[in-house]
Image (cartoon, rainbow, N blue to C red; front, top):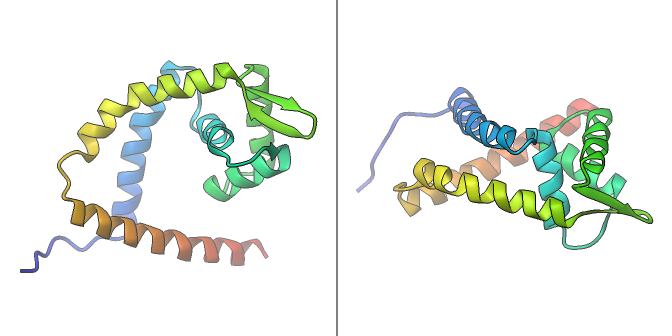
Length: 147
């Protein structure tokens, strides 16, 4: 049996993104973080290997398509807050950075559970496939516009 639902498109994706991001930004603000700071700090925390500043800038730029100057300013803010620290050529999260992200995770977990809870696994799998394809295609288009 096939269940059909409303056809979705870019507007629906954008509305869902901004609704969820709005919730996250409210939580982040309570912890003194901006969205871009959280993305950068999370990237530093989840890195498989030590990152240089340029590596971290590139990761955040790839994720957010943000201006490199703005990303570097964000890293400077995180360094000033002592959430990141440079050690030689590398930049890494401090214990305070880890603790802050853990607190943010703890605060967002129940909200995320309410937002995502009850959605059938098959629907989530389908959404995951579609979003991966949309992301891949948008990244190709973005790269073409950068040339």
